[in-house]
Image (cartoon, rainbow, N blue to C red):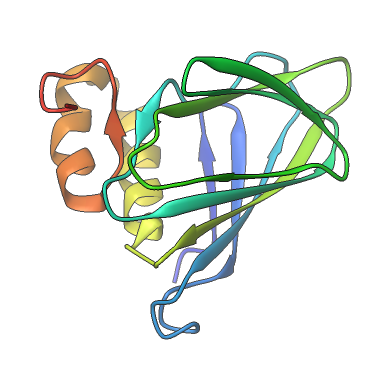
Length: 144
């Protein structure tokens, strides 16, 4: 199985998959070198998302509130809450993201990695991935 992904400058490594955890959660290590990288506002209908900042700084938008998180900070985003994050500050970041319950985010990351390499329009290609993997960008029509 593919255990590492590179998506638009963000490196993702699988720490635990849904099979290993009886679908209770999936856990990933995220690293990035540049400032301003990260997903736009999105939400999950069936999963909560937990973040732990290992090093560096990440700016989160959660329900229209900006939060700058640094090494040692953690955040929990309940299902249905609009959120996004971007790398921030001068240092590379490392954080752990956990999705619970597991809804095959590995498949989602595989799809995003293929999409980022394909040159296809991100906006049109993301809709089927969103529906399949419970990851809904806020700016798309189905994201209500």
